[in-house]
Image (tube, rainbow, N blue to C red; front, side, top):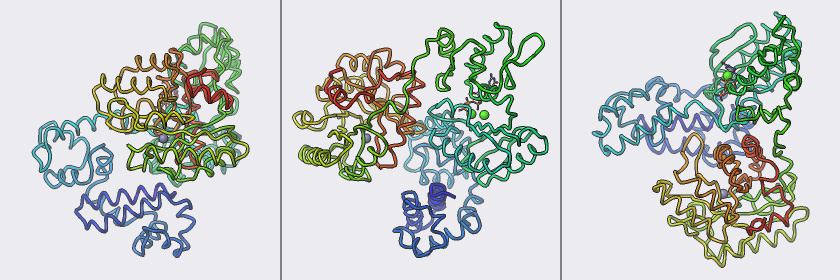
Length: 580
Ligand code: DGT
Ligand code: CA
Ligand code: CA
Ligand code: ZN
């Protein structure tokens, strides 16, 4: 079990205890331990045989130590099991509804003994939630909306989560004798921002012989994080992981591996269009091969490249396979030269211990240099973000001075001094103009009051864009994937203003944001708006998340020219002052 899984289990237990009306001190101790474990650099699994070290961690006392030891011994936490028996596992799903916390759930339970989403939705529709203590019609409507949102996005996972699960599974699969290749397909390979289920393709000698294949499938069924097998066949097994994620693994012969990769990478729309093209050219395309219509003789199948080539197409990168015109371009040999990770020369949105980051200026800079960047920027928060200890004018000036001094000492990387300034409710920035004018980079972001009327939000963003100090509009739509929708505003007007004022738009690569989305990025590109891809790192380990941004950029067909942080440092600095 990794730290994240342990922390989740403890958070869940605390929520269930709260629903159960248990002692608040005890509940807090579970939450504290969960938080401590979530942030722990070492793995609890590695420390479990050294109780002293575990007890040294603030938030973990004797009782919690016993819990953890029991968890590793038995694979379960008795109190968690007991509470789930009492309230039914559906309670955990109910806890995932936004705005529905343990307190409200306890209220609902004590009045109606309902512990599942369908049941709560029915109560709300019947007007039976508004009559509960401290509830009203407004709460009831909000709850119905939250349930609707959950249904829409529920069952999907963030791309980094899917990637980690795919890597863990690949490590396990690699121990099967005779295995040669293990590759994720489906939406993960296409780089979609969220992933429904994980599709994993496997090939090698183990997949050819019937007996070996059956043994391999049996082995996969014993994968420790597996919760239950949904279906198992001759060359395929589908199962659910404890995290709730569903996985389809297919074992394929090497002759048809390319055809299978093509088929299972999708998207469905791309595949349908490709199959039509094949038919017109006298072929059939299946998950096994590209074959002649007459006689069925296979002409390609080992690799994707040969399949596309036989169809007179340039190779189409997986990120583009959404049937949005890529097949036509590939036929005319006009596919764009998509941005690659190595095109990026810097990451210019990161935080330090001065506000809510976890590392110092020097540590972030050293990490960025080790990552291979030529430049980077420190852009800590401004004062309106009080919970992040945001900078006021005075601290902001002192901070950029420290950043510049660090830059003078640092070799091999250019450090820009910037700020991530809050866009206030009317569109003003919350640091004074003459302070902002001293920055190399000003990222202006909305961090509060997301519920404004669309017209008001549009005016707010337009005003921020018109501020001559603004270089970049940070995470422009404010969405948080699987959690919070974009705030509504007139994107068209904002893009036009950004293009006119030469203000760049951010592609925030943090996997729970990916903001702008691929769809908006495509739109931005049509308007001639330049993009800056940033991680918004709060820790040195976050820098590598840039790759999720690169994937979205590729999905939006962006090239090096569309992205400002591919420019050399001096040109990039000018671009941050609207000169490009
Ligand atoms: P997801 O899982 O919702 O994030 O999205 P995908 O794209 O991974 O979809 P999934 O897992 O249902 O299927 C994986 C790929 O397999 C899909 O992208 C294309 C292919 N595929 C699945 N079902 C069909 C089908 O009925 N027709 C065609 N042409 N392709 C299919
Ligand atoms: Ca899938
Ligand atoms: Ca699938
Ligand atoms: Zn930030």
